[in-house]
Image (tube, rainbow, N blue to C red; front, side):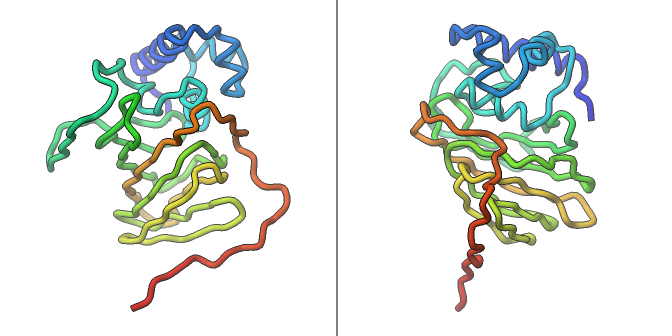
Length: 217
């Protein structure tokens, strides 16, 4: 799924603005995100779309949440009170080249510790890269069935089930049902913002699998 031209242009301009605010050269951001200078230059000019993996890398290198790549910088730096009500008007954001859609429910300001998202997984998945980033996240399946890959383990969750994971572990999620799946995701940022992590690195030595913990009555 390709982003519309105006969305691409807005995304590119936002990335360039954030980069320049931080005094970063194009090569600085490209190196920090593990991308080529040429690709990042075309992305900033709105000439190419980007995968969700690349957007996460860029956001991490800029030290912002992914949602901040799609909006102008807010006037305040930390949320005080946010109320999300049934029927609130808000457009889903399409994640380029994947078919996934997401909506920010709360958080996302520079000094917020949490971001709360609603994600919609298409029937046909197109994200096959493992991602890794500082912090923690909790994912709650609202509808459908989703398989989570975390390091060398995998967990299948149905509606009403959730998973908490250390985001530093390579991870990804995929829709394994026959219909679209929906998930609520809460992301907690890491206070160690200067710490560097390698991206997409799956452990080379298989660690012994640990069974998922279950609670019985």
